[in-house]
Length: 337
Image (cartoon, rainbow, N blue to C red):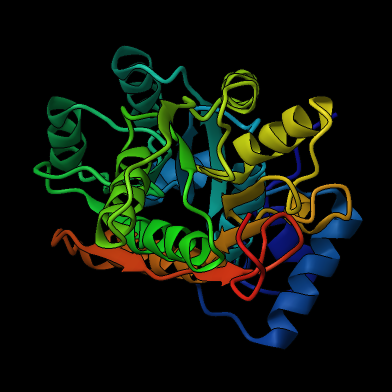
């Protein structure tokens, strides 16, 4: 079967071949009447535009590469969907690559994305080397870090205000009468993990309190569960645990229940992210809500400006989240243990 061409579509629709090209080019101008005729003709003939061929001609693939280290954390599938929808509204498609959380593995994936001639790259929850950042810049491919900061490489980054959010969560626990507060932190090799731990420590110091315990949970549910079991089997045990993200906090809640303890009554638990599962009755997790929609909006605005206008000025955006109160932690008007 011979492949249908744009010239055949143009002939059937009674328009020029350039009009067919405009209809199938994101962002190009075509009247509603012309677009309707062209799409009707294309459907009747079974025509499919060749995006790769168009990219070779225009120099633009209309694809954005996204690198993510892991999808077990429920925050990232939700973020991926929001990013994809926002980019599609701008005429871009998202090409997703997963990478091991190591510099070498991530750099190789970014190299692969550059070979696909993507127009821009979003690195979510990962960092890249200065050398690779420079090569991407030289190739005219902007790179933006999402939910991860990285100083000194001229890369734009968009995060929640992680330190402020952690301070807010910790002050809430202190105001609720808790004094033996442990922190199961996110991976300390990440800016988010370090910033949230710094916020926890700052709030504790301001209150004249020492951390009951400080553990690197590695953003890993099983690690967080094991750490929680160790903490509650100690004597005395903590009366509250601030956890570096919801993914780990769900494991902490499961561990407490396995030890016969009731979150919110025996030990308060606060997470960070407010993924959809946090609102489920099974967890009812008090947590810091990441302002995902605003983070996505800022990411898309910055990246598309860099692509469309060649704007290379890097930006660092921090957006404050809010504390979402549920049943996993005692409220400040409760009585201390």
